[in-house]
Length: 99
Image (cartoon, rainbow, N blue to C red):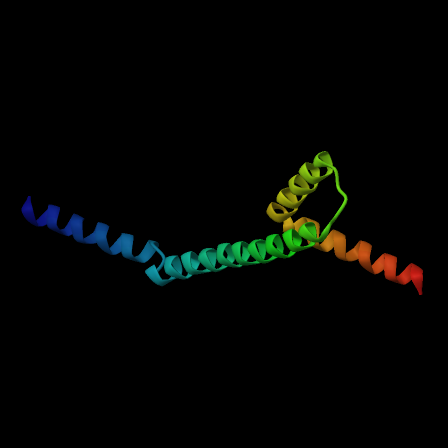
């Protein structure tokens, strides 16, 4: 009886070792996720600082315009992966129409 249980436990362990992917795949996946999140946060921070610099240069805006501008900056900072390419295409269209 003991021998049978012992054989069953070792066969379960060897089966689990064969079916589970290696640990380095999990570590690599975690590292890639951390890299992507860090890149997103870094670019978001850079864009927020740049856009706030432009906002501070704006003069003659009413309080309502300032609130709407800050709201737009906040939304654009969160959704920069969508906003930035769209803004770049519009900038290219504007420069192409001027020349």
